[in-house]
Length: 157
Image (cartoon, rainbow, N blue to C red; front, side):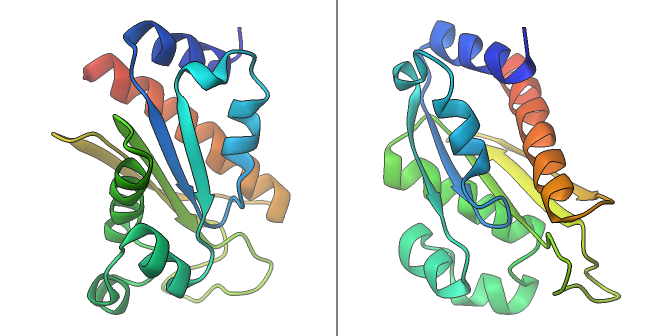
């Protein structure tokens, strides 16, 4: 069984719901989840908030958070995860933000930098990654890590 299928099974068995906020992955995680039969048992919805304006308007990421930390940061990923939980009334939220390239990177925040956060009402985990590869590879790796982190979060919570 693939990790995403294990995630679906664990979400269904625990009777918890999931909301997702994606930026650099452009809805790819939501796409993979909805390819699984029965995903409607736990998946409330996903949103692609690509611009800062969308992050603020849809997910309630504050302008201060974006100015202080940047769109690609742990704080923004967490705010996105919390925003996804809120808008979808979900038990668990996932936030993914990063730079998939080939442009847009800097010395401080290079192409391949991705922040992922998983949250529930009481706790969160977040991780920073620096992936190598082209745009599609970076997106695929981000999805893989988001699923792995979600499984870890479910095991601990």
